[in-house]
Length: 244
Image (tube, rainbow, N blue to C red):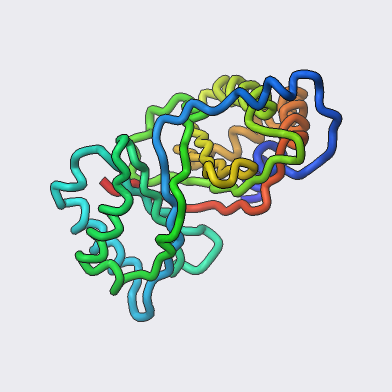
């Protein structure tokens, strides 16, 4: 866990700093992510006298329904590694032009989900871009490690100025031959904020990154570029499960 913290603190967990904007800032506002789908992140808590077995039973029954076999949306569950197991996040990934979220909420309610957990369904869709997709031989794995970061751009910065650091990071991390994925989520209502999700598909990813890359000059330069653009106010690591 210490190695994981060092990696995230150095590369992804961002902290604010000030810097003079260059002449290209105005043009940077025209650059936007290539969004390919949308996500809803739903914060949930298990009801009293319910447990993970109750949730697993409900979700296992849910995905047998033919309505969930059309690939219009995907369902994932995140369970914190360092907090009580009664809290979790549902991630609804919408892959179609049709908003499947109202259908999903209504359907699981009719199927009795309200007896299993209490959730904050009053959440906005977040447009999502797949920023990094490196050597993903294991993306079909049902379980993996995810880190979810809630971030804010520093004053005067935006995705356009951030993209240079993202591209450098993508090139460097890809060279490690590490199964890894990075997602960028943004709520259009809060343009100054974004969510970054790291997905790691190997158990020893932290050791590999620390040994091979974290202390290199390139890593330090990318860290500085990240710090210039944004700061993350919250970061949590989860055991993630794809429900399909």
